[in-house]
Length: 628
Image (cartoon, rainbow, N blue to C red):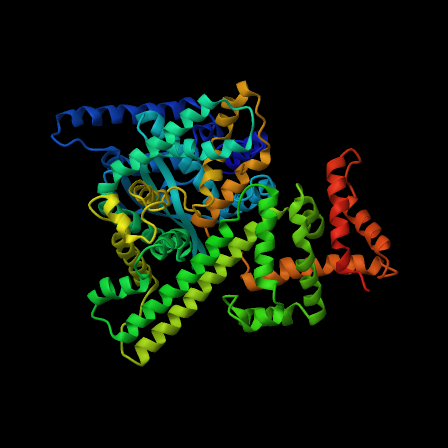
């Protein structure tokens, strides 16, 4: 395994992380040997036999039946012969053919001490280049994607093989990798039409693109609506499979993170309807259970917590766009949200999930009122920096980190605190209903099951009718935003969350970024130049994958500690460092020159635009130190 990891690390290093995840380019990460070619030929031969038998069947079977029979053998062979894993350490826990185009396979792999050492060295050697995929879960994600490319190439069928969740569990000093592989329809047509629709609006920012190019994109948008209307009648049946997918994933990861954006998407649409989501849950879901009123109220309180939390999370995620300006606006958004009213309010209010923890960490890190005021001053005066084109260079100087990395850690710690709070709420509610009312307590598994069923009831109530035009009557605005074809599209979008498990506000940039090379080739004849800032890079995309699929909290701070350790302390160090150099705090020019020296250090003199922006930033930040 050590040799394979080093080989993969060097290839990724040479690629400069330009490869696209889930594409055939991943195939090149393995040495293309005759043995690998033979493996692919054997799969193709077996698939041909399956297709011939299919011709004799009254009802043809799909690729899910084929892989239900054969995937485990292929997976064992692939791990053992090409990836350095030991087939004897792999155990298939469960396989489920959920539908004609969805197959779930749950595995457990026992990691040896040698394998753990290999991954530790892999992370140390390549973690700064390919951060996020040097762990066992990240490596497994890559090789499952490679196997998927091999299987798709061998069968010439439109499906994806995805590692859709993985956790490392420790038991008696042994490490086990527990994971879920999903084989599913690739939705090629759907994503191509979505890409064309997103591109139509995206390219309006640029000049020189002929009208006939836009005409082609408009056709894609119309095909998307046609597909949505075509798929609408089968949506109700498929919803069961979709929510079962979320149920499986949340239980595997033992956290609620995979459901957050989907939860918000559904609940925000219910708020646009003529119904109350709590009335729907009470009258059409809870009424079916023989629960005490106390237990029903407990469920509603947990639902309300998740509703508010998912709204907040999706608000932050909606600003998680590629450009440095967007990343800085996201940074400012959560700084203002948490620090806008001061640390005292943060400690005593409900802005944080675990305010008691903030009090503990304040004492641990010796955060006093003077430090809090310094942070407050920075937040008050930093907003104007959002006008800069390269504000990330300013943040990098202050925090010694790129702003996208800071924001990524914010989301990780936010999710850890959210899930920790959910655990506390669940324990408290269980204590009340068990001790005071003698009710059976909820397990996490029970809770996820109930939440998924509630979401199904909400979707069914507002979206599902004989036709999407009939469903329009369920909404406050039935003649514009919620006309029939838009409702059909919203229903179709529900199923995209299985493939793009992020806020729908992020989808346009995500989809376009995944097809960046193709887009740039298409635009070459028009000599249209699109800056890199308009695209997510591969590291950004990996971060989305890691956040929702491999979330492990063993090395992640709580948000309450992170805000102190990674925001307050670095800001205090920066402000204090500048303050110590100032001899006359009433002299604007002196403060300006000290800031200028700090921010311009190591900046090449020919970077004229960046230097101009630094000078502007220095002028805006002067009031932090200025005494009148």
